Length: 156
Image 1 (cartoon, one colour):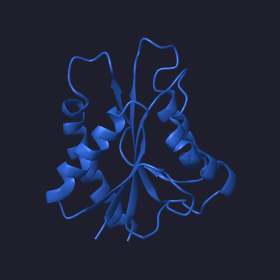
Image 2 (tube, helix red, strand yellow):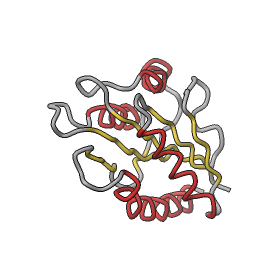
Image 3 (cartoon, helix red, strand yellow):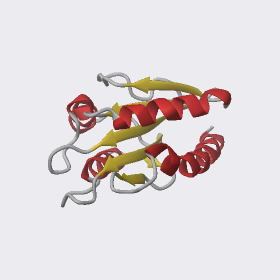
Image 4 (tube, one colour):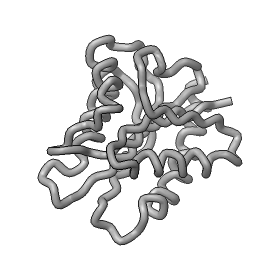
């Protein structure tokens, strides 16, 4: 059975709340879901059927939240063997800042640089939108899960 490993980067709790909502939404699916709030090296792609979903907010001028910095450090320094492995990105930001959605872009580039495969398009959620992050994520999540299943079928 496939596992969705949600790695959270959150300061104020919005990205963590969205990750928990996603885990709850996927509870009735045939997928295992794991939410990881404190990433440590060695926790990436521990099984053949694992797909990573990064759910992060931005801080400062598009910086990564402190609790997800170890993921970027691990990718950049340890070069884990993740070529061909699947991942997705959800990035929560505020478009009134000049570096809107930069944290997600930084992680997306890091994964791509070592050969991981982006599944679907990244979801960018703007804090200035009138809808809740959960409302904005709902349709994207359904489509993304379908794409994950297709990706895993091909990669087996």
